[in-house]
Amino acid sequence: MNGADSLVQTLLDGGVDVCFTNPGTSEMHFVAALDRHHDMRCILGLQENVVTGAADGYARMLDKPASTLLHTGPGLANGFANLHNAKRAFVPIINIVGDHATHHLKYDSPLTSDIEGIAAPVSGWFRTSQSPTEVASDAAEAIQFANTAPGNISTLILPANTAWGDANGPAVTKAAPTPQTPGDERIRAVAEVIRSGEPVLVLAANRALRDDAMELLSKITTSDSVDLLAQQSNGRIERGAGRVAMDRVRYPVDQALDQLSKYKHVILVAAKNPVAFFAYPNKPSLMMPEGTGVHKLVAREEDVMGALDALIDELGVGKNNAKVSDKFLPPMPTGSLNQDVISLVLANMIPENAIISDESVSTGRRFFEDSYGSNPHSWIQVTGGAIGNGLPLATGAAIACPDRPVISLQADGSGMYTLQSLWTQAREGSNITTLIFSNRKYQILLGEMAGVGVLNPGPKAMDMMELDRPALDWVALAKGMGVDGGVATNATELAKQMERGLTCEGPYLIEVIF
Image (cartoon, rainbow, N blue to C red; front, top):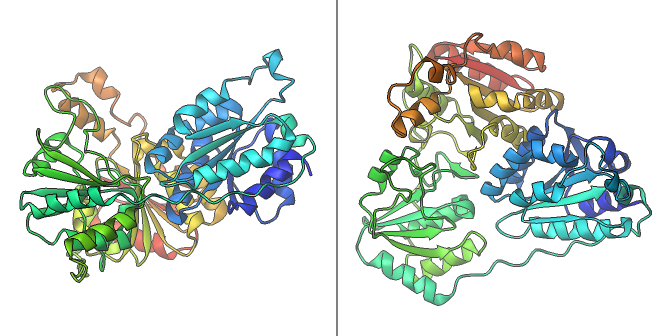
């Protein structure tokens, strides 16, 4: 057994059985080892940001890590943006990054780079294996760290000679540490705030946005003075009929300030104090009113369910019923498309147990509002603000849950960052219906220019916002990747195209022109 074999077997024994890959020369012995271990599923992405984004989507849906295989420092750098998003989603991922053989590094060949320096900002754990006999134990430690709450990114750098040299065998991965439950003093302090009668916001994120946690949160927030919201950006939230309806903090600063203006206290449940996405002239960075009391019930790395159970007991509300959404679909619209019409069509068309991958950016700001009573579904979205996440996220989610339909809500500008995802979807026969919102401009940047005080942009500025000359032909692009597609320019066409996409085998793309 060589180092590469010991690595693959350690991954498999540690519960990691999918590898999203884009390999190069330094990784050929690891590729050969993957070929010898048939229990490891390997999925090729044609660009590393597809690979890392797909690993993110996979982990969000299964709460377990996939591995990635990336080629030296530039390969890791290409996947950096979606690792940034994954880090903000607090998901487990194990990156395997090949490097030159240790004896070759001193010659400074063209691909020599500071891989650890690239890995550090997006990895909670990183290490370069120094010998073939250390690879397995390093991998076991990487798996353990990735699985430690709330979910982390590990990056193992594999010099070529540590992959081809003789190893002792796989290593056993230790169980991740058990998350700690907050102490009684913190529980009692939060209960006092809830009982105060003053306006209180309970702000939830991460593990607190799963069904079981949201039901407990709903019992806690039965008082008229206590409201419940999710963070603005969330790795995953369970939604639809039969589930607790939960809005999220608004993205536009003025809307968020108005939304949060009435509260005297905010209780953080695996969340952080809400902050504006960007700084704007003469506007605050923190969204809660000045002087708001900030109270942490439970940190994201702590035992969220244990904390909620303890608070339920302290408040004595265990017998309360959770407030869940009834099944309700808004009237199906007709006529030309705009953001509101698209939202209403989507709310009607979400199938049972769907997964929504949302990188709709500006077009999708009303989607939550219209789909509280839609069929039950999971909603995943870009969390770190690095665009190009939606198509890979949908790809990984479909690999994780092949029995669930996936709807990918994708802005056209950001979709071009990781267009190669469509090829992987076609190759894997993934059950994904992609809606490309083709307004042919970076619409969000037009709003952001106004937000920072640039009110009359000139032709040169506008030229950097518009996706024309030529207009993108998304159906042609999709067909070039092996994905069938169609165009929708009104509500009736959009509903028909979605029905076609949701019932056909394999992926389907709809260019939604408005």
